[in-house]
Length: 224
Ligand SMILES: O=c1ccn([C@@H]2O[C@H](COP(=O)(O)O)[C@@H](O)[C@H]2O)c(=O)[nH]1
Image (cartoon, rainbow, N blue to C red; front, top):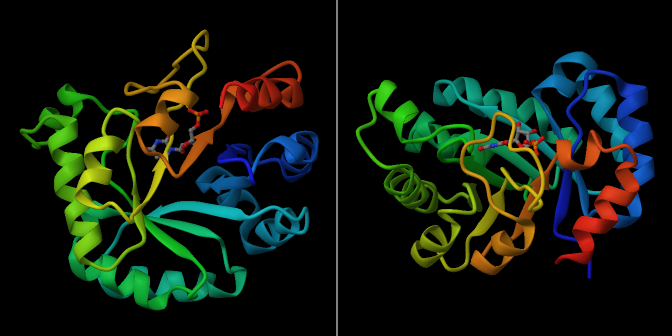
């Protein structure tokens, strides 16, 4: 069975991205490429990474008016990513237009509450809810808009899956027991995230910043 780990390759440097991906390719299930990589390397960069033969998770977290997001997803269609992200806070019409514009084989998933945010951050942004309440609210919205799943932290994934048993659940903010959380505020270990109902795990720095990314990926895989 393919590994549930998607390694987040967060670098603007195409050659470094390829080198890290080549090192870890036998111990991960896919490559997650985000804004940092896309802004520097565009669609051609994504194609070159796809040539490595692993599924591509395009984490652009699109968030705009429905027409703009729909057109952006249309422009991404030729890349046929395995997974594509949008922000649930963009609203139902935006989510519906994103899904309608995506290739049939692409899972369109909605980011609920970023794993770098806690209750205080939500309050400061005018959302008077606990993260888990907001995740549940936005999970129901994504489900009702016809998306494939959501992105949430491992602390909320069990509750989100209860609302949407057949949904696809992406969990970032994943840290092995001894790893540094950095800017992530809602973190969980890889094993606990899977036990709670994650479909896939997004893991970046604990692998990519390790002295040997391949050894780090293997060590995480061994805990699953
Ligand atoms: O809520 C979210 C949504 C996306 N991410 C992305 O996942 C990786 C995490 O990287 P680490 O180095 O393992 O912290 C990164 O690319 C984020 O953009 C997230 O962290 N939280």
